Length: 399
Image 1 (cartoon, helix red, strand yellow):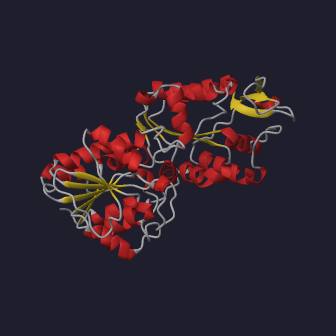
Image 2: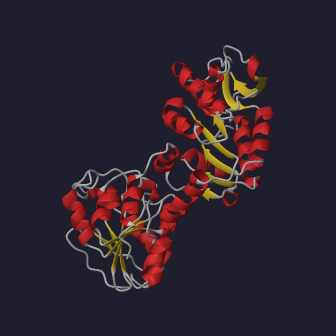
């Protein structure tokens, strides 16, 4: 993925005294009173803004927040709390500008935050008239919002078509580099962990990865469907019996390449889905009709951990059991620890995966933690993300 990088633009001196428009991802969770409950995305946006300010640019930043109705402002849709937090992180006031599409006043060395971009009429459908207006605001457009890269909207795609210069910010650049390292030119063996409640939501990912990975570890409800495909009984566990043939096809596709989908040899079961349910370790062949499989067993976890420690590249999306319940977290904890201890380059993404990484304190031992949920999944599916595609097209323009 060849894109022009803002780091190179800033280093060249081209950004000095020019208007830089940064599309960030500042869509943070908030409490009922509007206070920010978790500011990771705001903190992640700071390096790009500081880079632009250090280069002597006049800096405009915008983001979406929540799911507002275009053209209908409500107080809860405002980026005001974000502007306050961003100002604290930057050590300067960050004015919040409303109704900004037709013009923004900002001087070199200053930064302003432009109100929720999804309030603008035509943003989500990437209206060309809006896109041209947005492009007219700036000399340099910078996309630093990987979390929205799978959407072709006014501030993620349209503006990049028409802005004089369109480039990737440091956060987006890092995502591109990590994904390329993991999927385009991986160090072998390449192991992917894909877990979740349903095969149907991850089927295209499984099919795409089965063409490339050396080992495809499945977990959660997805593993139950694959156990059915392998002829095992799963009791009353969550599964999708109508997708057994699809699971068999993935297994066969892997086998044809000399690769494999490891099927659990032991599991942890319970009679009810609850935190205080009694956990019982069983051979995968001994699951009773009234059992719920809520985790992989210790034997399976140990085998997978040993394989992960020998891997060259690991892609992780999803915990392998109900790790929120202490009795059923061992599989995910063992997998997480194996990834942390492996010398492989690892990339992880998805909300539950990030929660597991935080729970087991291995943030510093994962090669790259993706900031984009939906965008990360679409990359795993083998899709080209619109926001990256347009930057690739525009990279030929250069400075």
